Figure 1: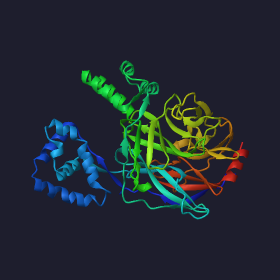
Figure 2 (figure 1 turned 60 degrees about the vertical axis):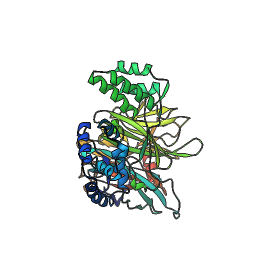
Figure 3 (figure 1 turned 90 degrees about the horizontal axis):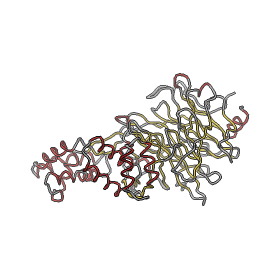
Figure 4 (figure 1 turned 90 degrees about the vertical axis):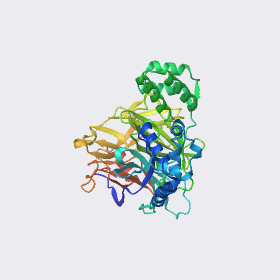
Amino acid sequence: MRISIDRSPVKVYPDSKRVIARFFFNGEERAKEVIQRVMEIDEDAVFGIISPILQEYSKRHRNITRFLNKHCNKLKHLFDELGIDYYAIKPYRRLLIGSYFTHEYSIESAAFFNPSIVEDPDQSELVEGQKRIIISFRAVGEGHISSIVFRRAIIDSDNSVHIIPVGNYIDEAEVIRNAKYNKKLFFEKAAASLIDVDLLADLENKLDDHFEYSTLRRIIIEAQMLEEDDEKKMEYEKVLWLSDSHYEMVFSLDTDITDRVIFPFSELERKGIEDARFVKFTEDDGQSTYYATYTAFDGAMIMPKLLETKDFYDFKVRPLYGNGAQNKNLALFPRKINGNYVMISRIDGQNNFIMYSKNITVWENPQILQTPKYSWEFVQIGNCGSPIETEHGWLVITHGVGPMRKYCLGASLLDLNDPSIEIGRLKEPLLIPNPDEREGYVPNVVYSCGSVVHNGTLIIPYGLSDYSSSFASVNLEQLINKLLTDQ
């Protein structure tokens, strides 16, 4: 007999009207032509062109002039090459130039799926039995570029989920590069990225054991100036792309959580940020930190990365290293076990592995944890978010892929003290695509990146064939009992 699971009538749909103002660049020579043409416009005509633009787009962006000025400023080096005094340009002309290098991007226009869920750091002003939560989603826009967006919700005492309406604006964070790199780890990752080994050896000899981004950039630019081979110049560029994988993001304090979007920033993310798995991690001192593992994709190479935040305003971004930090599907346990960080992964694309580490960014020696066992998971098995601690063991929601590439959700139970031991697994799926949920952008798929327990109930947000998301709930005690007896 299958365990009873309830599907919520609540659906979370994408909002294609939510747009961000992105920097647009079509090559330096073309950019110089545009700059020169705008510089030739009469000053009165400049105001006549930019004024209606500001009026129109001020209704769509919190501070459109800030974006236009920022995008104009990114071209400062071209003004220098053209012999134009950038600082002598009047404000309205700068705004007009910036507008030619700005475009709107609808971040949720193509798909909206793979939700993850965590307890909101702010639990104030709630009544007994309620919990405020933050849900992250993978949003896909034009060109199949993925980003991370957020919704806030409240779970009532009866486990009903109430989604709080989204804000009117979308903001990207200010990006800060202030990382200090460990030379050994950095060049190990560079070698794994198949960058020219001789070039890497030369760079490595010029750097200290710990170095800053500015130092690396200076050395690479100097080397590129001396290099005549275009392919070698590109190899140097790839090292800079890798260094861009370390950065911090800071959102304005006047933004709502739904206003904040984590959009691809580095070159190694240019095709998307995929499947963030958020977890509220309890430190040894009892303090909480929110982590999320996600996949950066550049169109060819996959790089697992780690987000870290305390408040969902400031985020630190770092790549993950080691032979266990490969492929997709990494999920961090919510606390250390026997003094180690613990991670589940699917490094071979088929099986679940488990890894232990003293360093949260370095993952070596992955060990097989689970292999496909039942017909609905024969193609592959993976996790659907971080394990949840219960008194009987670590509850892991899994996904399995079976005939016709149909995705279903399952559940497993791991030993509390030694999670490499599986003590229970459901023989049948916990959740399967039903006739109302099977059609969409990617049909026959239900998928999740994290769940939460509230009032004795496991609540699972899940994507419906990638076109929207919903929620399923199951009594936690019944699920645990089924896992312990379904062998």
